[in-house]
Image (cartoon, rainbow, N blue to C red):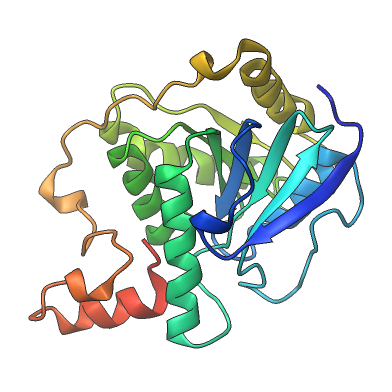
Length: 245
């Protein structure tokens, strides 16, 4: 892996403002306060490469970090909570969704999930959204240093059991800790394998299996709240406030 000269390249408010598509990109996204920026710094081996903030929802732009001028780490806005007006929240969530669906040089999405929590509905919904769009992704359980091994494994098992019926084959699952460095080599190994193999190595996740009615999300995972049926006023309100997808 080429980790020399890890530098901040640029921030983009939307897909049109993203840098050229010449380098393979690996995007990191998850619920706000999942430890995304800390993990990016750990992977890059550069302290404060990505800014870490105690305020959930701090990242509001698509941030690109060039790794030895051969590939990029991409820091996407977190979902689930953000400071600011609904208008601004909608704008940067739409930008993240457009990037994930339409960026041709996006090789893999790293979906970060807090290992210290039981399965969260918004994380489960986002897994469904990624699968339905056949986007290549892996699941990374973060903060494994903050709980007992037994509790962490219980939460991970519960999460995988919830999503197992949605796939013909589960996406790859990893564990990591930014505090201890656990999982760093495994995640870099995923990136290195794809970079070395070239664009042809990128494959979509296994197609989702039909979802039983009882586990369908309460509303479509869309950016625009106007697409939610008017009669479901409660769901529409929740979508504007907390559901970017």
